[in-house]
Length: 322
Ligand SMILES: [Zn+2]
Image (tube, rainbow, N blue to C red):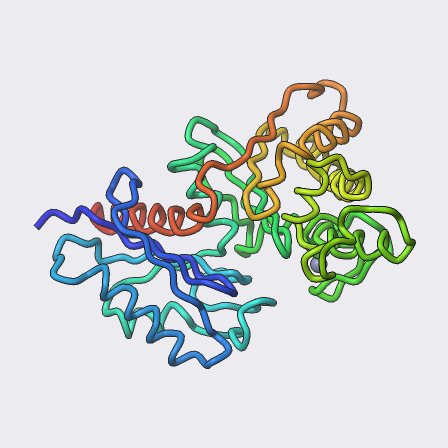
């Protein structure tokens, strides 16, 4: 029987998102379940198996390779999670083997931001681009680099950790243990820090109407900014300065002219893009001036699973020709 469908899975700290895709990358079925990794690896693996079984039902036309992207640092051979700051208890977890045994299928593993970059490359904002950098803007700042329409993972597979490039010498301490990482200056953590600072100062702002946990969320700050709240606007202006410098560095270094923004904070794109563009422009090396685009990804939270399916498709094709 002709294999027509591909399973792509995106394992995040909160949810596991999965899609059954056709070979053109269109979604046939979509499912989301809570990750609940804190309940242990076995129940976690069982939930993923259950998810795949639902896709399988009576179908025989699903690719034997399943693509999986994970929020964590993956080893060079793409077999285990070296470290994940958000997936509890998953450090040194041989997730590929564990899933292969339970699913009786081949599994291909990739980092989630790399997966999102592949998803946008296949079906999203990167469809017609040769080179681009994708940034996932959320609790942290992930990134995936596409060069010549291929994922660039570097010599040891760990490339494109833009969130942990340093932007402030001796700056704020990051979850990775280092100081001054970009992730500390553009992320929901950064927004939270800046809002708290403004509230402490006693500045007049609409954000005071909300309990602190909501007042510091990117969505609420975005809404307040759209209503003209100066504190909220300045929060987005401030974080955009750091990201703008970092993006200009990427463009100056690699000559990549397209940046795709993904992740929750990219929903505030219309608000911060003028600040971001201004800062990138200020920091570009002359010949590249004005010749860059910063787009919003079009797949939203489906980018990772789409990239996972794309990886599975590529892998299946390769095994066929050998
Ligand atoms: Zn860091």
